[in-house]
Amino acid sequence: MGVSYLVQVFKENDKPVHTVREREKLIARVRRIRGQIEGIERAIVDEKGCYDVLQTVTAARGALNSLVAEMIEDHVRYHVLDPDQKASPKRARAADELIDIVRAYVK
Image 1 (cartoon, rainbow, N blue to C red):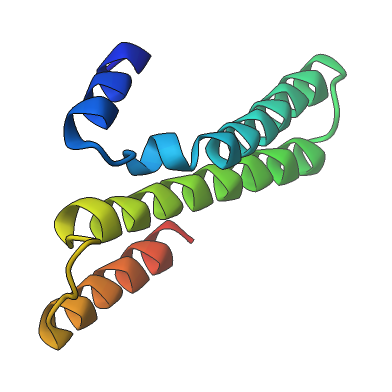
Image 2 (image 1 turned 180 degrees about the vertical axis):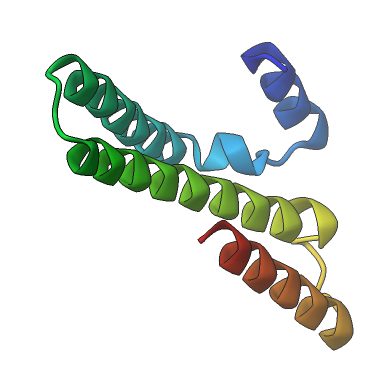
């Protein structure tokens, strides 16, 4: 799915897609993750100890998992629930429970 598709969806639905709306925040997170991944490579090239490399890998994995959890939460809030309509208490609770489970799973 390319940028042109997202722009088309944006125009067709007359409201921003959540990934477009949160674009700058998501790009900043991805760039931080890229920096962490590059740090893993540098640590291996520089022959750092296993502990240092594993700490860097763990930090990158945590950042990536957080990004996944945030994107799933946004997907649930903007596509599973209709943000323009008030969800029933049962649906809202189910969505919150799903988001909590996803966040716990990717921790």
